[in-house]
Image 1: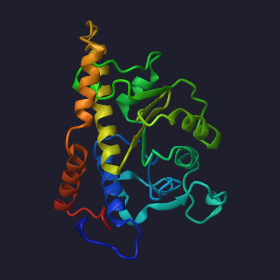
Image 2: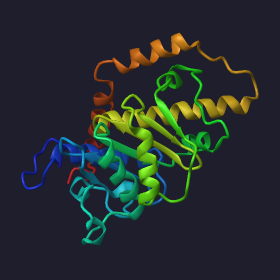
Image 3: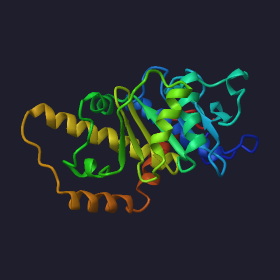
Length: 251
C-alpha cells in the first residue's frame, strides 16, 4: 500500500507513515540497537500527546498502525494494555511534558554518536560541512545516572529547554535529536551520525585536525538550516524506495 493512501479510521496517518519509514530506514542503516531505542512525535499543540513505537518492537518491522498514542500527563499510562517501554516513557514522556518545541524526538545508540558520547571530551569540532551543521546547536549531558526511567528522563528534559539546541550528546549513552517533524528529526539524526563518524575516523589518523573558524562554522550551519526542503525530500525519497520495494511500513 503506498504511503499516500489515507486510513480514515486511524489518526495522524501521514505522520504515522513518515515515522514508520524513519524506523525502517534507521534499522537499514544499522543505527538502532536490538529492540531498544525509541522515536516519538507530538500530535497536539502543547506536545503532551504523542505517538511512539510499541514496547520492544524491532525498528525493521514497525508499521504505521503499530504506533502507540500516549499522553505525557497520564499517570496510568504504564498500567494500561499495550503500555510503552519503561525507559521510553521515562525519557520521551518527560521531554514531551516539559519541552513543547520538541515535536519529534529520536533517540538511538548509533555507533559513532555513542563513541563520541563516550569520550571525556564529547564536543564535535567543525572539521567538515556535516560537523559544522551542529556548531553551537547541541548540548552535552555530563551526568548519566543509569537507565532512563522517569527521574533520569526529567533530568535530561531539563537540559533541552533552549529550542536552538536540537541535539543532546548523551554522555556514556548515545544521542537524542529533536526536530519539527519526522523528516526534520530523521535528517538531523542521519547527519549527526555522519558527522560523528567523520570526526571519530579523523581522530584515528592521529594527525592534526583542520578545524573551521567559528564564523565560517556558524555561517555554514545557518546556510544548511535554510537549505530548501532538504529534510522533506530526504525522507520522501526513502519512502519512495520502500514503496518500490513493496514494504508494508505504511499499513
